[in-house]
Length: 48
Image (cartoon, rainbow, N blue to C red; front, side):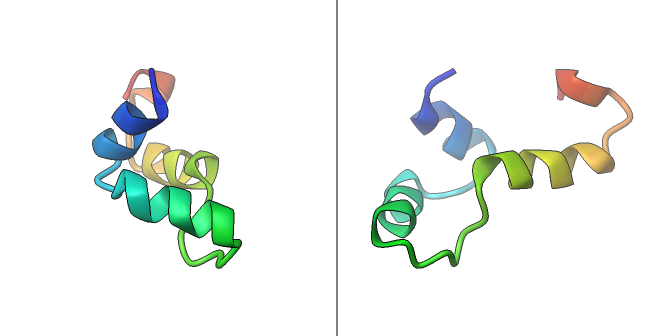
């Protein structure tokens, strides 16, 4: 899965995410953190 597809699936703007990473603002959590947080509420584990 590409970064664009991942951000889209997580309802995050790709451009905002990349800008946040490049400028090191830190306003948007890492994708790993967002995925982990979303998976806690999902009983399907990694298959979300």
